[in-house]
Amino acid sequence: MPIDAAKATSAEPRTTELAWDHKDIQLYHLGIGAGAATPDKPHPATDPDELRYTLEGALQVLPSFATVAGGGMAVAGGLSAPGIDVDLAAVLHGGQTVTVHRAIPVRGRATQTSTVPAVYDKQKAAVIVLRSEVADDDGPLWTCDTQIFVRGEGGFGGDRGPSVRLELPDRTPDRTTERLIREDQALLYRLSGDWNPLHADPEFAKLAGFDRPILHGLCSYGVTLKAVVDTVLGGDVGRVRSYTTRFAGVVFPGETLRIRMWEGEGRTQVSVTAADRDDAPVLADTVVEHS
Image (cartoon, rainbow, N blue to C red):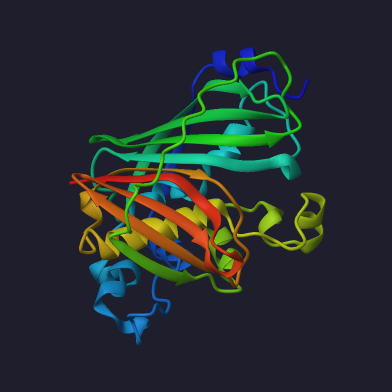
């Protein structure tokens, strides 16, 4: 059996040392579209609102950087856990939550502690839940909760797990914006540490059931958080407390993301769709908690 749920969930926590600096942050921000053209920015590369993501002297860190800090990736960490041995072509990112305990520094060294709290049996698939807690000498920095969807690995008699869906508000969105995904976006984003060939190699993508490489789900995740920070939070990344999503569909490089936002007290609910494919779902059950 490729997945031994009992072994995975009872394994000792695994620790990894992380380190990053301004170059890692700038590369990540470029990988999610910082400095790229949007409908309201005719000169994005020199726009002051974009320079806070791209220029070292004014740099701030988008909280979704936590998913790639240190050149690692939560999905890869989950697949290396004891009791788990799966085919990479069968793996998809199911969901992601980042909870920020304090501002992520531009340069840092920290320790990541990873566990597998649960492995759920969805019959036709398994869902591996990975938790990564990161702290430096000053205390906790962030917590990442990741759901890894593995096709064909269900049916082992385990707990099916929660299945909660978040309904969209029954009113017009407070804000709607669009973000073009460049043809080379996945090639740039993968330099932050996600080397899955699904996002670059056409032949591997076909083995996984796609006619061409798809964009990383975590790239869409970052693009969306940046859009919320820029349009709802006045560009202040420090206001983000947590950010959660369910990956509901794929995005192909060259497509446009349509991002709809409903503002509430201390939270913004978001829907992300592929504008070029009749608003096919991309991110669902998406909430940014903020001050």
